Amino acid sequence: MNTLQYDWRSIAALNVVSTLAQVGQFGIPFIVIPLWLEQQGATTLQLSLFASSLWLGQLPGLHWAPRMTQMLGAKRVILIALLVTVLALSLLATGVHALWLAAGLLAGFGQGLRWIGLEPWLYNIAPGHARGRLVGFHESLIALAPIVAPALCGWLGIEGATPLLLGMGFVMVSALPMLWATEEPRSVPDPTLPAARTQPFWRLPKETILLIGVAVALFGGMSESAFAGLFSIYGRAHQLDVTQIASLLISFGAGGLLLQYAAGWLADHRGIGFACLTCSVCAAGVAVLLTLPLGMVWLHIAVFALGGLVTAYLTLALIASAKTSSGNMARNMSVVSMVYTATAIVGPLLAGGAIKVLGGNGLMWTLAAFALVLTAWLSRIVSRDAVRPAAV
Image (cartoon, rainbow, N blue to C red; front, side, top):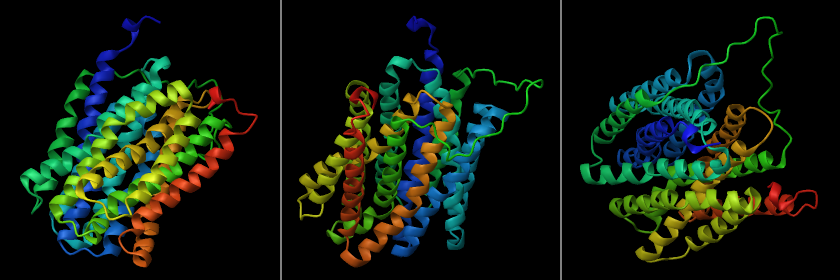
């Protein structure tokens, strides 16, 4: 197909929408707000519960998004998602501690709804031969959020309602580029045909590539949520102040930004199985390294690498869902996203338990354990004689 036939204007517009929205929907609630809550005296249990509420709230958004998109159109669903996030940040701005969990649930719902409202639309209009690289490029753009959010809050200050107003601003501005995106007409069911029943979400196309994506999403969700929600406790255990913790969060985000295209390239050229196995092995090694007493330079290098690897879990899981030949892409992506999100709920709780037993390093030991279990499973799957490397 001639490249001129691709809707590059919509592809560019949707990438901009996602980049801006991710700052307000992920960078602020998931990365900055835990630090903001800790400054207000939140305990480890409260931080763990808030972090889990963000991921728990995503589940209904991820589940309902495909059906809502079919009924209302992707643009309307994305706008609803942005409005929900503004409401969530407004609840936090009231300063009422009893509303923290409700705000976390709403923030997660908005994030999940926008995620599945936008990304299947984007990947469906993308060139098929370069879909892995486009997913990697898109994930690189949204990986700006964990860099931009703490950097701006470090500059403007994290006191008062500043982070909340910043998040609202990014969310509202992100709606503007959708004016340049052309939505494909929604399919209308043929009334002469019997209504097709929606298959249960657990009925996946039986392809190894999608099973790999589901497994990577499972461990990736736990890893990212545990790191984002409890890294400040790890930092305190290593005698780091708020400024140093914020700078390390920026390094984590920078790794997520700069290494995702490489993950997509590796999946396109060496197969999704090889790419996932490389990611899990490296993640285990870096997590163990971070349990050692490192200086700030080595801390930044290690956290940068960990950011790229943990973020690559989701990138590779989405590539697997996009490359699966059977099933509907939106549904496959929704299922992978729901697995990622469901396991992210328990990530902070498991890591919080490890921290109580092992101290601040319990976070990194938890991430290493997740990566090692994933490595063992992937090694078994990738080495099976029935699966050719080119297929996975």
